[in-house]
Amino acid sequence: MPFLKKTSPNYYVDFWVGQKGTPNAIHVNKSTGQKDLQAAVEVEERLRTEAEETYFRLQGGYSDPSSLNYSEALEFVFRDRWSNNSDGAKPYAQCLKIMELYGDRPISDFSGDPGTILIRQIRQGLTGADNGKGRTIGEATVDRYMAALSTLLCHVRDEYPMRSLDVPKIRKYNTTRVRTHILSTTEEAELFKHLNAKFPEFTDLFKVLLDTGMRLSEALNVTYARHINLKKSFIMLTPDICKTSKVRSFPLSQRALNILKKRAHGNAVKPFNWTPTRCDQVFRQVRILMGLIENQDFTPHMLRHSCTTRLLERGVPKHIVQTWLGHSDATMTNRYFKQTTIGMEIGVKILDLLNAGDEYCSITEFSNGAINGNDTE
Image (cartoon, rainbow, N blue to C red):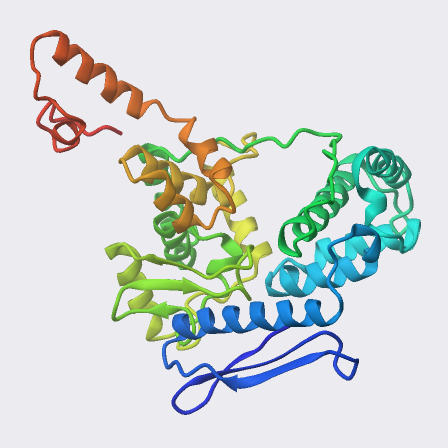
């Protein structure tokens, strides 16, 4: 895993590509020449990419899937993707378990029709197997194993690159259900009313989640020194606390900025110091007070969904929302876009005006209140 450290005045990188001490392993230990953290992270990524390309070239490359074993692919994906992910240990352990059960074989075994058969055997073999803790592996857990395996194979195909690897479609037992609950303005008022009354210390956290779209794990790990820029009013999430392995930055609303400034006085390192479990417990108790105990979608993560939908409903372009929220591809953003008909309703009003003879109406005029002065929420 690469390291990015602060010296005076610049950041420097110190990492290995390949196992330290082995032939062709590359050690990168140099200054980025950058005082700004975001610029230093970009230099780090470039240096890492260059070093890995050199390393794999020295190793002879892996244009043929038969030349790469599963264990080598797993270590590559861990270094390149999961080591920079706060949850990366889970898919790594799941893929390691698959190798323990089915052996270290050429990655080509997972390609094409033979790969489809092998993957089906792995899925069936994992179902009902002992998880090592005296319990059997259920279908939902098997789906997570298979998702990790799919990520490994697709990452090898796309990032090695190994275009000849024909990754089969991996079928799941359970179709992923999209959590669709979006916080209404009425629910927002009630939520924060109960929080203020019973858990006032948590109010700031959930307001920041709603205004930034951060995941709970991200918000609980941001620090003032590394991630929060109060002067310029933005947050930069680094790979060590993100679900994805990419840096992302986004601006702060005035409400979120005021909260983080206020909390900096008593929390010099981190604005929020609770565990995810404690936050979930608080949210569940508030859900009970609101009479929503049966609504399993009413969770802290719902605040991220609500932020996404609000941005889309107000006309923020999808590609900007995708970057802001850190969605790996546009498909994730489109899920939220499909949940709202606001854009369609605007379109119908514009067509009605055109049919009435107004040739100059536009979506800009509508959003500015020229067509009707009502809020679109």
